[in-house]
Image (tube, rainbow, N blue to C red; front, side, top):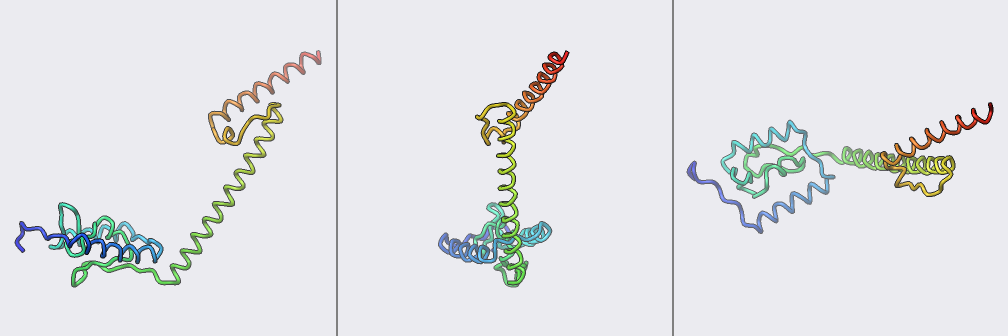
Length: 169
């Protein structure tokens, strides 16, 4: 192969087979990505490879798009010898990650429930104070609407003070 001649990609069927195999492994491991520094190292290694199809930024051996393949922890370079190695997570680390992710999701759900309860309580208080029953949770979530309501509450409070002062004289 001469310097001007770029390598050809594998057949579309071979590329689909290679990609689906890599994707299955990636998903099975929990879709882990490498750090930015490892990603840059991998791309630099690929950039010096004679199998690189620079126009498409594809590997000429497997046909994968390098911007994706180099980012996945579970992939390896198809060249022999490999230009970069995978960074697999062991089962214990995967289990810890899974538990951590589940715990984070649980905490997020709890926060959302608490927030909705707080909004509902605020809705009741504001409706009671304004003597109106049509303030919805949607309105409570709208900062512009809440600013307007807060202004009404302040002005109502000031008016009540003035009325009390006038009647007390």
